Structures are given as C-alpha cells and as structure tokens.
Length: 446
Image 1 (cartoon, rainbow, N blue to C red):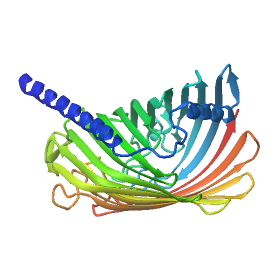
Image 2 (tube, one colour):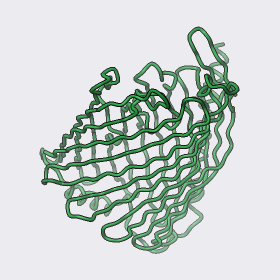
Image 3 (cartoon, one colour):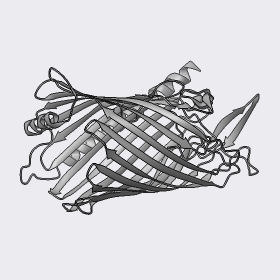
Image 4 (cartoon, rainbow, N blue to C red):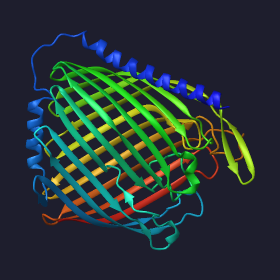
C-alpha cells in the first residue's frame, strides 16, 4: 500500500514538472518567432515604475503614516430577503444587518517595490432567524496583500488573495441552503517579461478551500495552479496570443474525485475605437478524474453515484467594453466553460452577463446588471432524492438582475439602495427557487 502511494506521488510530481516545462518551453519558443518594431514604454521597466509612483500619489487617502497611505471606511447595510433558504417551498424571509469595515493600504517601499493591502471584514446577523448568523467574520472577496517588484524588463508580483463568505448566490448548483460558509485562499507569484512587441507571463498559485460548515466539508481541497501566456502586440490596437494552464486538485475526503486539468488556447484583444474594446479567447480543456463515480453518505448508508471520469471539451469566452458617451458605459461578457462541481465531478456552464453604468446626475451613480446561466452537471448526487434514476445530472437555468443607486451625500458619506432578483429553474424536484432582495446601506470614509 505504501509502495503504491509512493509511486502515485512520484507520478503526480512528474506530471507537474513536465507540464511546467512544457509551458515554459512554449513561451520561450514563441519568443523567437517575431521581430520587434517600434519601441513602446515597457510594462516592467523604469517608466512603468515611475508611472506607478505617480498613480500612488494620486490615490485618495485619509491617513498618512510616513510613506504609507491608508484609506479606512465603515458601512452598515440592511437587507430584506424574501427567500433566505433558496427554497422552492416553505420559503423563509428575513431582515439581515451587515456592518463592514474596509482598509486599503499602499506602501511604496522603494522606487521599484510597492506593497499593497486591501481588506474588507464584516458580519451578518438575521433579525428573525438568529441560527443563520455568520459563524465568524466575513472577509470580502477582493481582499489581498500584494507586493510588486520591478527588475529590468521583469515585473514580479507576489500575492495572497483571500475571502470568507457565506452567501450561496454565486453557486447556481446549490438550492435549499442558507450557509455556504467557505474560506478560500490563493497565494502565489506571477512574472511578466516585457520585450516590447512580446509579453510573456508565467505564474504559480496554491489554492485552498476550507468549509466553515460541516455540511460542505467534503469540498475541502487544495490545488496547484500553473499558468502561462505569450502575447504579440501586432500594433497599438491589436494583440494576439496563446495561453495554457495546468491545475492539480486534491480533496481531503473521498466524496468527490481528485483530478488533473489542462487547457490550451489563444486570445485576441482589439481596440476598435477609443471607446470600444473587445477580447475573445478560446481553446480546449481536459479534466481527468480518479473515478467515474462519486460517493454520498446518508446516515449509515453509502451511495455510489455514476459520474463522468474524463472531460474533453472546448472553452470560449468574450468581453466587450463600450463607453457609449460621457455618462453611459457598458460591458457584455459571454462564454462556455467547465468547472469543478459541487455535487458532481464537473459542471458545464454557458453564460451571458451585462452591466450598464449611468452617470446622469452629479454625485449620483446608477448601475444595472443582468445575467443568464444554462448549466448541466456531469452526474452526481443532487437528484438522489428526486423521482429520477440515480445519478441523473441536474440541468438548470438561472436568470437574474440588479439595479443599484448610489449617492455621495458629503465627501465622507455615501448612501446606496439596491434591488436584486434571481430565479432558478431545475429539472430536479424541489430545486427551483425565486428570490428577491432589497437593501439600503451607508458608508463613511474617515
């Protein structure tokens, strides 16, 4: 048994080494294929560092300790949610109060090295259902600590990004859930090499997922992520390139399957006008899982549920950014991709998202959001209690949108009101839901 495990570990390490070597060789090999034309300012050189210093000097702050700039803010929000359990029947409504504290710090340690910290913490408590209160503090999704280093034509970014959230809204495969508590941490390094007409970037990240509730402990896992890209600047408005990734995921428990994921593809970025930019990417994706089934524990019983062992499929995504006029701008994104599943080995997702921002009145910002998702699981246990064959994958559609109005009352005080609606339609019993949320909040910047 020990010998078999040692061989398996050796095989995993060998695969990772080969993958990293392949990505590096692909990028270096591409480097000799193009000649350099007109010189432009390097993204990693002295000019870029000086521009970064100028940007730092313009960042608003409300506390200065030597060279370190801080921006501190506090907010409190009150939300009414008519379906906190994401349920089809017996919905529960509640008022949720969420105080938050934000801290942004930037420290230009030297002319070429900058340390940055962005941290948001908060807490949610329910007025009618206190059992749903946040177990610990919440950490905002954009929280991070990052360190930029400029060395010649290289820009090195060392980072650690973290979040601790409870709301299940981001996971369409979840229904009948209030507390999807999870801590996610991604730490690593990326290196950008700027050769004027050519941009090379390689990176490594280690990702950890830790559930804060026993119901989702089976999702606890860690991943090693290798990524690389090579971009050729055809002219100031057109960039084309190649990209590749390799991800190795290991679960703490044996409910879902360990897997290896590889993807390779290309991308193009075009600035059609000063106000219209387009990015499109596509390629092929492979995911290999340890088994063609997942397991599910229900009391003393163990269910073995059929699932797909391997995935070979294309991916494609696009993004359009359009500034319509001085007061109106929009972004549209769409794509087809495959992700690791919550109830299955993987889930295939087709999506469309749209945001529109209006600056119609001074000190007033109005934004609208819309999204549509068509998703199907590879198998799994989501429908294990439905009147369908065991392992029937969930196929669902979600549609939703939001409208947000913000008003800057004073230089220090901002007020906001938001409505968000989401509807899910599933092929499985008792997994549909409709949810409406209305919230008001106030933010004070010290």
